[in-house]
Image (cartoon, rainbow, N blue to C red; front, side):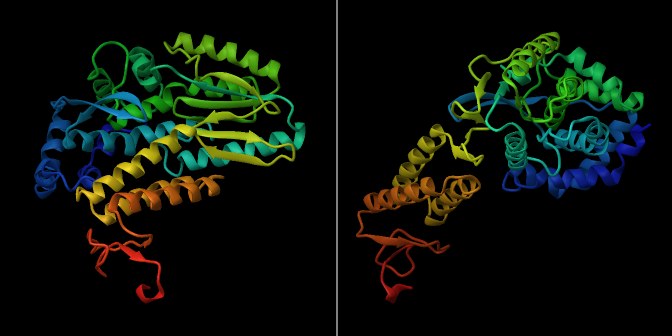
Length: 378
């Protein structure tokens, strides 16, 4: 049995404190925390040992991600340290052996790339045995994080091999979210709990119903099989989900025949050709957002709001993302649109874009980030 003292050691808290600073060291609050990290860790360990540790509450703010409004409940970096230590040294080691191998969210070595890679493998496996017969059931939950029942989640944690003190602090972090249902976006324990919550449904589909081609990424999942089997599986998933307080999103949950068109999974458009080739392309909404971003960055660059390096990094980020799937022609078209947008914004003759950290907005200067297409400038 995993014990409280084995998890919350000074060394574990110290390592987690530094990990929490990664990527946010530009913040003044993070710099202050890291400058006195030993004092903070000693204080946290003392409060945890005496059983008097309390949350500092949430910082509420709203973001719009891909046109969808999300309400974030972020936590203080000291609380992030405690939660990371709990998840990294207790919950994750206890939960991972119980998850199916096709669950790809939040876990080390997994991610959207591995989820899409396995989808390709499952489609190839199915096509080698059944051709384009059957279909794909894609499922998505409505307000997934906001529908998780606290009592059900805590009952699942109670079955893990941990002592009472670890269980109590886990339940404390869950109860920090108001009401009897819902987990907030912004804390690590919410992420691992969301992955764990639908684990019984995953095992039902894999072990009881015997589906080989099944995968999940957080609240998005797919199932490949005969159409009649998929209809039966959908009914079972709906019943099991309702028992856990979850409802499927009717707009994003559908069955698509493999020989009848494409289906959407993790913001990718996927279809299987007659020869068995698996084609993954970008969603149109993603291309439209990048087109708007290109025009906005070109305008900001011309007005001096951003540097050439920042604009180039923004483009490289999307280009790298798009290059991992079958989007070669799309990337080339967007690159041409980007060049045209930069030319129009800077009102300059045709020039070649290069990345320079010393970039400025004077295209006539050799220190500028735009250089003419002549060998003299190479």
